[in-house]
Image (cartoon, rainbow, N blue to C red):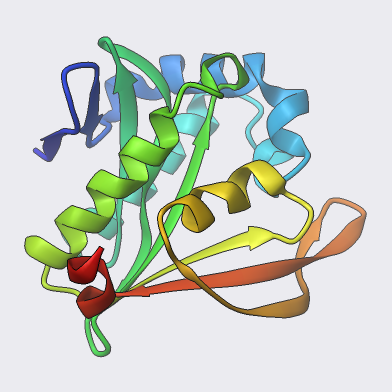
Length: 181
């Protein structure tokens, strides 16, 4: 079981099916907010959908193709973050994250992503981390910018969000750059 202490207040925990109801309630309570930038929200209609997501991330973890964990803030599940993909051929991890709106603005996600980057470069021995965020999603983009990532480009109309395409900005960080920070 993966558990990673970020600091005294925050931990990352590999979810299990017992977390399905809590994850669904978190998603359902933040549905309108999350839907603005996340394409999977409308497909999450019941706790069974969240349990299916958890089964998927556990399979990805078992196959070493991804590592998505629940964000615990003072023991309470408030979102998820991790490596949506792990490309071992090229030693690249792609980080994704979301969090309940009520917990934003406190530096939680920045601390979580910083811990994921440390873990990726120190434990997993990856060479590169990518973060992709919608061009207009300033809150999500602020995290890699705050952490010193390089904005490497924009992919036009790269993601379908319900009724329109959005452009994605790609950020990259190399292990050698992170060590210098």
